[in-house]
Image (cartoon, rainbow, N blue to C red; front, side, top):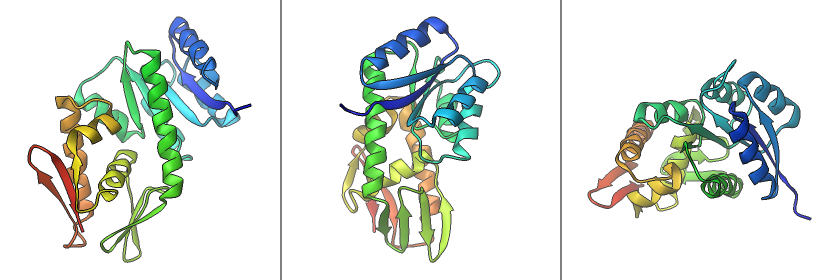
Length: 226
């Protein structure tokens, strides 16, 4: 029998929470449902789930605050935010607090399940690609660290994921639409602006090696030169 995947669902709307819980339980998930942020943190500490699905707006402790607290002790667990907000600043705020992905309400269960498995597959991929050389840099994908001459700098989850995909196609074009759909779920205008922000952050972090660059390939995407 396949081992069930332990998942924490934090959703303050009881009816939606129950629907999501029951749907996931038919797909080989063991689901722990919390209706507020404080309860969710208690369940997380007790059950140690493998993936988190967190509503942003919750009583007692919102999803962003909850994710930030969990990230302080677990840097690798996949986190998906459920939100009615879709403005760029709200999405960026979610990534800033440790989110790996987000889904706008209303959403389909099929899409949620696909995204959960995509994140879990990335975690497994990280284990197989823990250390990657990028010029003078050593990129530890598992620990989300970028090291240059023994000086290490932590990366956010989104920076780490983006750099990983760039590093897998060194000196080749990373298709813009592909990486947007892979990491953001959609290649719309707001997500494209979000990705540009993360590209700029990575460029600054890679400046210590002048032979390493991330260049724009107009109309196609980006290329990591090293």
